[in-house]
Structures are given as structure tokens and as C-alpha cells.
Image (cartoon, rainbow, N blue to C red; front, side, top):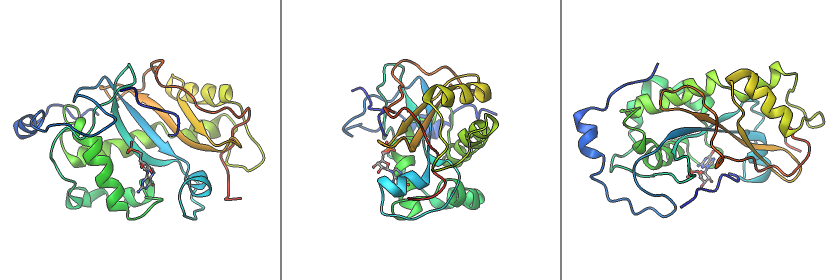
Length: 228
Ligand code: 5GP
């Protein structure tokens, strides 16, 4: 099934235990297929827009925060829930401060969001990111290295409710940072909801395949500075 993208130091080698787990799980989750993938989508969300439009929350956080690091296929399909492994918060105790800052939940308990992301997506990435800690810590490092806010700021675009930029300008800013354009989704007023940066299995940015598309029909994009 094609995944709708509308709104929506490599750690090598899987352990024998992980290898045994992979493929042992019967994948029956709707909307996804198989347990192989071609690359990652680094998906970040702008909390202010998410709280304005999607979730019942309030925030003033001016960071793109993590939604997930998703194994994905060039044709737009993706695997999910590839093993029976369960999320264990103790495994990420050493990065809890960063998790709470850069991977907050805008909808309920953070641990539930992290568990959802890990069981659905992280369990499919274990050939590259064999442990829960490597999955979350690598995702945070990628977010920091390819932070859309930093790329946009370098290009002169900052959080603002009134000063915007075009999708072409968004892509030029990301390309200047990463070498490649990204994808962006926004609401009907152009407020950015999410960004998607394509990351190869070598954990380096790569050109997004045609299946990863922008979904902004607004002519001007905004990174809203406050809820309004
Ligand atoms: P996916 O299941 O593909 O990882 O992402 C989609 C789901 O993530 C949707 O159900 C969406 O509501 C949820 N989601 C996105 N952001 C957040 C968040 O900040 N907290 C929680 N709990 N869920 C979120």
C-alpha cells in the first residue's frame, strides 16, 4: 500500500538476537507491508501548528520536534511493527532529557508516543539501528544535524505569524543545508505542520524519491511564532 505523505556515525550490524526477532513477527497491521525498506523519513513537526490545528494542546515551543524516523520504500510503501519487541523506557534513560525536549508528545503521555513510534517504526529499522537506544538517539542526532529551523534561519526565514516564504524557498533553504530538498505539509493557511527529510541507510541525507511529495497548496508558508 502506498503511504500517504500528505499530513501527515551509523550503528552497524544487528545482533543475533535481533536477527532472530526479525521476520518472526506476523505483520498484520493495516496500511503497511513487508519488513524491508529502502531509506528513512526523518519526520519533524512544528508544535505550534499541531496544537492550533490537530491536537488539544497549548505550546510556545519554537523547535521542530520529532514525530518519527520511519523506514520507507522508494515506491511509497513502508513496513511497520516488524518484531514483537516492546518499548522499554529504561533503555533510553540516558537520553531522557533530550527526548523530553525534542520528542515531546502533543497528545498525551510522551512514553505512549515513544512506544507507538518504536513498535510501529523502530522495530523495522533494526538492521541499521539495532537497539531501542540507537533508534532514538540516532533520530535525535539526525534532527539536530538536519534541523529545518536552522536551515530556514540561515536563509533568513524565522518563526513569524506574518512573514512567510514559498515552498520553493523552503526547499532551497533545506537544499543549502542538506544538499537535497525535503517535503513539507501545511494547513490551509500555510502554517507548517510537518517536514520530511530523506535519509539513506548510511544515515546521510539523500534525494527524496518521487513518492515523497509536498502537500501544501498554500502559496505562502509560515512557521508560526505563536498560536493564533
Ligand atoms: P505514525 O503512526 O505513522 O507514526 O504517525 C501518525 C500518528 O502519530 C497519528 O496517530 C498522529 O496522531 C500521531 N502523532 C503525531 N504527533 C503526535 C504527538 O505529538 N503525540 C502523540 N501521542 N501522537 C502523535
